[in-house]
Length: 249
Image 1 (cartoon, rainbow, N blue to C red):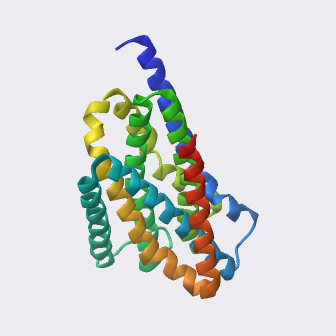
Image 2 (tube, one colour):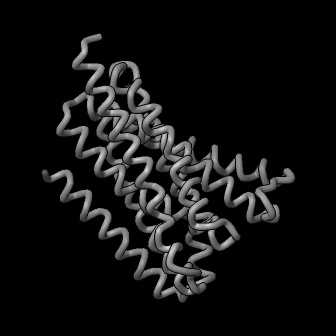
Image 3 (cartoon, rainbow, N blue to C red):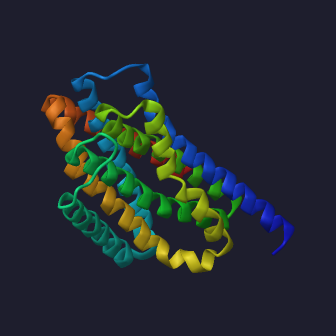
């Protein structure tokens, strides 16, 4: 292994660490005081839209690599999270002073985002294997995607008694697999590339389940349906527009 390769591997770790830290920015809105129920509903709709757009991006990227693998991964992601939810709902789940239902939601959102982070870490590493320019763009895209993921985590944790600082810390924790997976994926591109498409599909399926099962129902409870629909549409359009601009470069 050459010195230049080791140097670039260090850069990959650094940039992947930045994407993890960006997740903590999702807790920033809660540092300015408690949100009203209507604001929480709008924030849940916003996070849902951004995550739907991010999932769409993961699926389209996976299809370009392996359509069948992506589809299988997406189905597996939905099934895995649904089964995990069923199993955990039957157990005495605890998280600090939270009751069973709230603790279950916290564990699920952290689990979904942490699983998703493994795929993002592989994506960063593999992208740098295709050149620094591609790696920088993919890293920037993932870092921006991570902010609404941190927001989604904070939306579940802060209203249930967790401080914004701790919610931000847990958000960053959920993204730690990114720097941990990015370096080996960069050094062993040929080994990790075949599993990237199923991994992208798995992450997308898991996130879409969380949006449909948790975030959107909560948004509907706290905000009027027309507001939820408009917020959802605008957030999806904004994220897709950003992705289109990024890919056009």
